[in-house]
Length: 505
Ligand SMILES: Nc1ncnc2c1ncn2[C@@H]1O[C@H](COP(=O)(O)OP(=O)(O)OP(=O)(O)O)[C@@H](O)[C@H]1O
Ligand SMILES: [Mg+2]
Image (cartoon, rainbow, N blue to C red; front, top):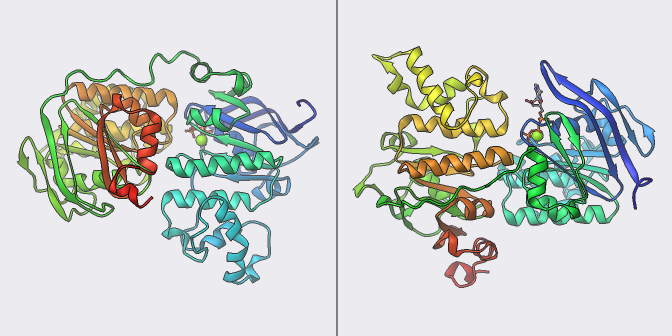
């Protein structure tokens, strides 16, 4: 059952990036046919370890043994030949190539002489495994959604016929239905005797598919106990090195009058007009899977997508909202789900990111006041607990959790009355996640109305006062979060029974 089944042994692995010790003497073992979960806060070293195994980074020290033999992994090709296949955390899809070409690329076949039809035939079974069996493999990969691209990456991994498969946060951008497919694939691979390294921030997944777990903390790693002997609180304690009293803050007591009325809004991604109210002090969770309409309504209210009809009123006054700029002018802040594209300027300093939406407040006669910029940034960073020492750092170099805090924090500068957020904690580790939930609750207590779209049901149930569930472009129903249980919510967002939308199965 153990010992001799060891397939991979990494010993004393160390890696520095400049002054950062990403790994400081990590030992890691993997057995045949097991799923090993890797957990740890943002920046703890998980990706660094798996990149070394995948031949993408070279360790400064340490040895790697696969199947009892010492190996040198200096390129992805060498790793692949040693039986290691890897799906990156950052998508590596090439948009202009077809889906089939993306899957076969770098696979070591002489596929250049293959026709599209033969390529398609070759990749179809792998696409089917990840639930993309109906998609034409000849389509440009760039035409797929982010989630579908992630699934194509996993299909590519499966096509490699490797002994060790590495998935680095494969489900971060996926919704529950797709996550189920990924988990089923992982279980099947392990049952076939392959070994899987699975990096995730979703603790539930550890219990669902992990046999063992390795926890990373500040560049060191340890293996606390077999997953079956751990509960979630123990896991969190190992992860953070402290107990987490509460993942979610207590719900607000003081929900006030209606702050924003949304009436009959029609927009791209919605199948029928959507109406709801958001109250002062209320956190409204818009729950739904990809394409459900939950994100679409947020984008429409924020002016990020054109609205084709309906009205949005603040305090009873209908607004003219045609753009994000209009929304900001009316005190509606919008934090998009695409942190890389429009949440954060990665090459700019944290201070510049934090003050970007409120430049008019800190300038006089078009001249920026350095002192006021500093004061404002310090205040915003303070609220979201971003270390003030980081104000001068490039935002792109921050951990995922800190980037998200900057993406949210910068909006407080415009003193909004409404905060709209898509996927508030995607790719964010548990510790930073709990902090973000608490800060959002504090903002609601100060009287903001907050609406967030999320495909993470646990987050919706834990954070929201009221839940609006979306399915296939329709608002299915609204309910107090306390009255919903997880099974009910999952059913509502995947195949609601008692509604018109559910009639289509
Ligand atoms: N190419 C690089 N250049 C400089 N520093 C890096 C580089 N890659 C990683 N680091 C740093 O090394 C440390 C470990 O990073 P790593 O990506 O392994 O963390 P992680 O555990 O995967 O985090 P996350 O959960 O956010 O993905 C971090 O401090 C990170 O900023
Ligand atoms: Mg990582």
